[in-house]
Each structure stands twice: as C-alpha cells, then as structure tokens.
Length: 457
Image 1: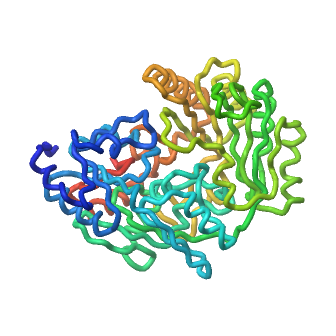
Image 2: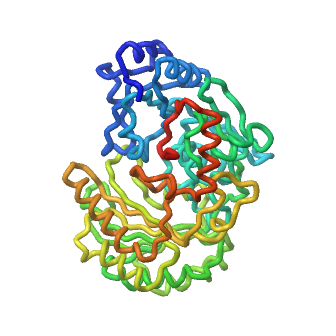
Image 3: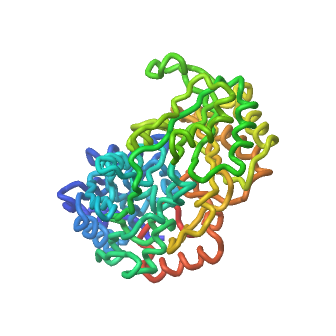
C-alpha cells in the first residue's frame, strides 16, 4: 500500500478552483461528511469539481501523487467505502449537477452529481417518467451504477439497463463516451458494476412514456402485522407485473414533525405503484383493501409524485442497516419477520421492509449490462436510526437479527444498492460476471486508481 504524505496531497491544492480540502482545512469536515452521517469518512483530501474537465484534472493529479480516487455524489451508502479512504481523494460530485431532456427521443442527459428529484420533475414536465428509486434526494449515478430498483421495476427491470450512454473519466484522465457502439466493454461493466472503472460525469437515460400511475399506500396498525404480512405475501404470488410494491413494519419515533396520527406508532404499510387503468388497479388491490386499512391513499397521481410515496427521509440522516434477498416467502417467513421486527419484538428498527421483485427483474434485459437481472423474489432491507453510537450498535444487532430470522428463505445473494457494509463481490455477482468485470477493470485501471463503494474483491 502506498504511504500517504503531506507533500503529495498538497499537490492537489488549487484544483477545482480551490475546492480541494485537506485534513485541518476549513471546509474539510463539511466536504467529507456523507448523507448517512453515522459513517465517518476520513479521506486524504476531498475535491469538489463542477465540470468534467475538473474531474479529469483531479484524477491525473491524484494518480501522479500516488493517491487513489473515490467518486461520490451524496453518500447515501458510504459504509463499504469509509474504511478505505486513508490514501484516497474523495471526489464529491455534489456541485456538478444538471439535467437536459430530449422529449422526442425520450432521453435525459444527467450530470454526475444530480439528484433524482431534479430528473423526475424535468421528465414529468413532458409527460414522461424516469426509473428513479424511493427517495428524491439520492444521487442518480450511484443508484444507477449499482443497479437501481424503481417503482416501475417489475414491468421495466433495473434502472441500469435503461442507460443508453455514459461519459466517463478514465484512470489516465481521458474523457470517453461509452455506449453500445463505443467502449462497449466499459458500457457493459458500468451497468451494475458500480464505480470501479472511472468517474461517470454524465449518463444518458431512456425515459418511459408514463405521465401518471395509480400509486400510494395502505396503512394498518402494527397489531395487525401478522394478518397483513401473510396476506401481502399470498397476494404477491402470481401478481401481475404492472404492480410493484413494498411491505414495511414501521416503528415511528414520537417526533413533533410527524403527523399526529402516526407519531410514535407501530404500523404496517404497503406502498407502491400500479401501471394500469383505475379499474384494473382497483381489481388488483382489492384483496389488500379487503383488510380494511386505516389509511388508503392509492389513487391516480402524477408520475412526479412517486418519488415521495415511500416517505424516505430527506436530508442527512444517521442510519445502520442489513439486507438479504429471498427466493420466496410464505406464511412462516412472514411470521418470522413479525417475530423479529414487529410491535412486540423489542426491535429498535425504524423499518423492516420487503420489496417485491420478479417480473421483468427476473429476466435478462435485452442488451443489458453486468447486472442484467436481479434473481430472487423479494429484497429485504432493515434499517435503524443511529443517532448515537449506542443506538447504532443496537440497531445493527436488530437488523442482523431480522436477517437471521429470514435466512431460511434467503438466496444467499445481495444487491449493492441495499448493502451498506463491506461484503465479498461474489455475493453480488455470479462467477462469470465477476471474472469479466475484473478483466475490464484490469484493462482500464491496471494501477487500481479508482475505489468504488463496492469493489470487485
């Protein structure tokens, strides 16, 4: 490992118009802090570029100084990277944002640090939709390079396979375009292989001709968790692909900013979207509505509203989590979930969530990338607020307990967007795909300049 010294790091000063911060500098702490503020990032320097040219300058200067480069836009999932930053320049793309649309071609060009909500709103203005996730302030690039799970996923697949081109700064500082005809190996690797191959300065995304959807949530008191969870599991079996939903057991804190009717309560929530007519959507949702939810917000809504139906926190938040993918679920699995994370479990989890997979997610995307499908029936994600180290420890233990409870139904595979701790790359890719990804990396970055959130080791 290359030893970091003050002199090499000092050589980066003056780049990015002076927006390079070293330990001890005013602004260093703010620049290094990720969205998940429970994670400590201590890089050798932080650079904040505002153009592809500045990105290239930083990459060349870092390589010349014997330093590595780690791209990051928001830092929603910084845990796997945080312990590997000692000799690394953290390249924060948060000030390098922008989106432009070609509505006739149904294509959006998105700069490297852009947040999803900006793209969602730009597309909606033209009656179009984009394959965003459940949170409006997640960065487009990191989400997409890791795969991307959208409310349109069961009918349209993973977000990464809706990328039609990428602009990338390589390890030698050159800016290239990758698409199906140019740098095709890089184009394949980027779609699901994370940031292991360069710094993505722009993505071109295929848009969907969706102006609205039948979307919202159904909510019950936590005392009904066992019944609702079993019913949801049964309902998802054989469900039409135009329906993508999530089931969550929520334990909401008594915060004054929360609406009074949910403040401090244990709840069960099913939310998501149905890409069908109102009549067809009502027919599909009827088995869940028969359980008489306390709140039912499912209705025809503009596409721009879907990024907030999950009520994910916006703004920096401390959290710890765990994750697994399940092949299938049955009544016993649902009972295990409730026992581990329900109202009477003693768990400190804010949310214990299962997202329904399958449909288009299970089929290879035509011309898809490294992650051309997501095998498995359900993705489990268990998260706790980590406002103090003690709460973090307990939350991490409770998340692990939930994963262990569902282990009998696990596929043994992980999805990088939900994996917030270092794991072997072999848990996210099959052997053939992983070998191919490593070959692409060896060709494009033989010195190992780049550090992705999830590496290939």
